[in-house]
Length: 459
Ligand SMILES: Nc1ncnc2c1ncn2[C@@H]1O[C@H](COP(=O)(O)OP(=O)(O)O)[C@@H](O)[C@H]1O
Ligand SMILES: [Mg+2]
Image 1 (cartoon, rainbow, N blue to C red):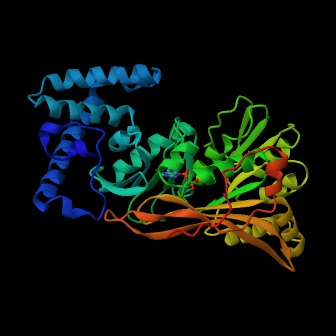
Image 2 (image 1 turned 120 degrees about the horizontal axis):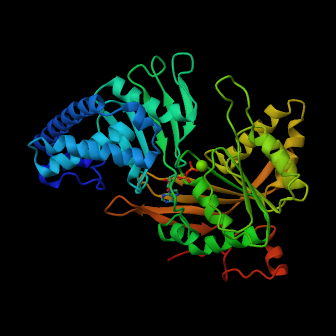
């Protein structure tokens, strides 16, 4: 990252970012060239010292050590090695850190993985590494020496997990020790280079208040969603990849009372519930021999025997959709899940498809009836051009009309314009329609903001 950028006296700053990709105007060409050259020089030094260290270190002794001891031993060896060199102190520190990362860490991308403001790290090629911060993609100055170097780090990541990647299995999904997810695809499927996508597991999830303050939804709609959870409505969060579905589900889940027994089903684990009584289940992919797979669907079926008060499914993707609707229809109200789709209507179509795939002999009408009686709300979330995530629709699943499930928007995002910084202006507005379950709030004694569902025209 930027420790490989000028100026040299700022080395080895690890936590500051880089200009957004495509925003080269903010960095002069001369500076950029110098930065690249410096990066290459440093990488050259790192490589040289790494090689020398390999000769000096006793690999087997190192392997036998526990990870923290190992890092320490390598650090000391690197220090001793570099002490003999006439290097500027800052460069020496930078090289030392990088060599240690090379021996016991994940090489050049280690600082990106440690930077808690970075949510995603993407290695497309040795000299093409991107990262995402606050929803915006940046090109990093991090570079690998060559394709083999990328491959070494790929293997470093997946080998301890008992996974392998080679010509016969050129695509791998795995989880790092810290919970981050990694996807690897190698040549010839990705002809240019082994390609790695790391979705980091972020420890601190955004709360409903955070989401309100970043403008994902209004505080009134936040209160409404909280009330819906209390009322045990079944809610599906719909959105594209990385739009913030899981984050929203997690925030909404905070309104589940502490007294309830919650079972979560995920693939992979991501949710961080605050309640004391939570059981987290995680699906398991097949092992190298293609055996041992446990699907979300199987977990869900098992969950029904675990006396859950609430069932949360991180994301419905397949046959579990059928069992989820069944559960929602048979006493497991208040279930929450997410689905990958681009509109509330699309979400239902996908759900229908998933059920159909799992039960080819079910008539479509029966599936739709099930969907319409099981689901109460679809929350559509989207990532806008300015990087902001906003709820665009809060939609009620209102029933059936003929063969069609009826949907009605309770709130919709209305864009008003764009400010001078390119930020999209607008807000979630009531459409004027009251959800059909609104009476339930009064009966349950749940207070809602005055005039919440009224469509107030602004002047
Ligand atoms: N409302 C939001 N505003 C800003 N960033 C968000 C928001 N929701 C999620 N994020 C960030 O976006 C990334 C993806 O979020 P996630 O909830 O995992 O998305 P999804 O489940 O849709 O793939 C995370 O890094 C998360 O911190
Ligand atoms: Mg998700």
